Length: 71
Image 1 (cartoon, helix red, strand yellow):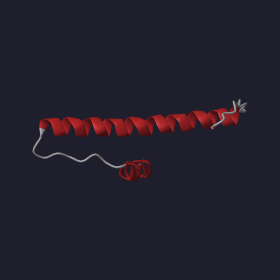
Image 2: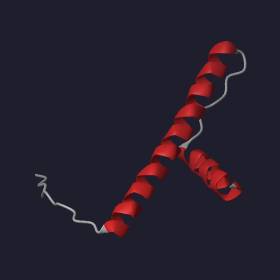
Image 3: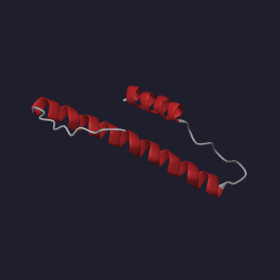
């Protein structure tokens, strides 16, 4: 049996800023991977003879790290 314990965070201003930054980075990473998957689906629909495989989570991680280092 799993039990859950409700907890409430009381972050200070610095912690609120860090939480907001973290949420922004996660949103950007999701949007990037979503954009990539949509483009792959469109490419595969337009060219059924040469289909592109979907990237794994490790491939996406490598891509995001490379994008961050590039900027």
